[in-house]
Image 1 (cartoon, protein in one colour):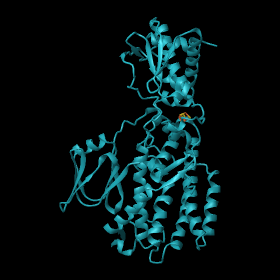
Image 2 (tube, rainbow over the protein chains, first blue to last red; image 1 turned 90 degrees about the vertical axis):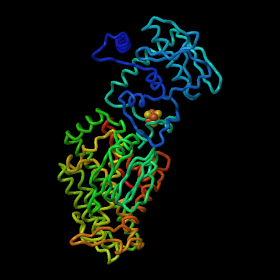
Image 3 (cartoon, rainbow over the protein chains, first blue to last red; image 1 turned 180 degrees about the vertical axis):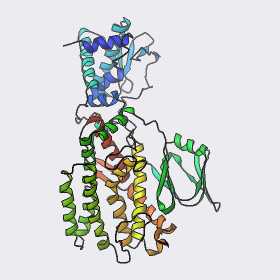
Image 4 (cartoon, chains in turn brown, blue; image 1 turned 30 degrees about the vertical axis):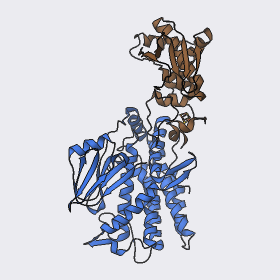
Length: 182
Length: 330
Ligand code: SF4
């Protein structure tokens, strides 16, 4: 498989791709695992002002109840991870149903720090309401998963049409629900 | 869904702290809670200043102005941060591609005729013989697909609407004879009611469109520029039978509106204040009425159906997924 998108992403991150930048934010990585169609909508800034769209799902709200003090919120090009005082990267799980998206968002941060900044860090996936934490580190397996996700994200956001809607348990709390299903 | 507020009296509205205050000419004061307002409708002579306008803009509240003859005169639309270059580009592209424009316009006509037909069917099953009109409407529908351009499509729509309006004289009591649709000015009570109702539908569509990033000036069935918000004309057509006509039949047949609710001037007939109040109260209640939505699995208000229509069109324009016009299903 061509590594074009990964190479382009790195070029963008290093400031070399001015004309046609390809960006993947942490939120985009998360959406890719939540819903590819939502990722396409988000990538095009398609806003929908759904009635009572308090966005119950919490994927797009920055949770402030960390349960564990973070030292800083870093803004590094495309990503803005939260760091613990000991330098580990922390990601808060929005809900237990969406663990994998949060885990991959965190893995992406670790990958980005490694590949773009040449900084190696460990990650912590925290769920404040359940008081559970999970250590995440960037092994070969995860690295490959992140890169293949980047390739898929590239394919999705550059496609003319969005992927078809498929019914998911969290559709009803999605801001695009009324857009997808009427 | 937020509420509409209608102001009939003459006077002025102004910002007062964090709310809007209305002071009528005879000194009466009222407050309009801006947090729960979708739009404010001005039917009388009202003064306001720029301070009020920016306040309403900040709260995303539209102002719709009605002038002489209860005719829609214009809107002051909040900015609301809903602009999207891509949406407008796609809107224009679809307009500019004769085939795509025709498809969208045909959907509007198909939906409109369906909704007229639903009304006719309802009265046909209640002791009126409207079989002939139903045939004419079906005939019009069958001609939609073979129309080659917008003007032919407009012709089909006009024929259907004429057939549909023929039912009015059958369904309404003799004291409310309709004859034919005349706008400017409305010559009799039925025309006055239709004009008033349709301009309310139109203004509500303007609000609904504004909640999306669609440009209300780019339309498909009607020619852009026919009115400032010509897309509202397209969408309003779908909803007139549901929002205006059904209400009109009900109010007249149940005698909630009588001939005393109108004032006649030379060659024109308009609702008087009592008539407008009755009609509006019922109109707003209709907007708040809810119906189970088969796809969304929840109840939605009639007013939200207008919003959904704008979403559906926007989705079609941005994704190419087919646009299915609103067809009354209940
Ligand atoms: S409603 Fe469902 S299919 Fe549509 S964007 Fe949201 S999660 Fe995806």
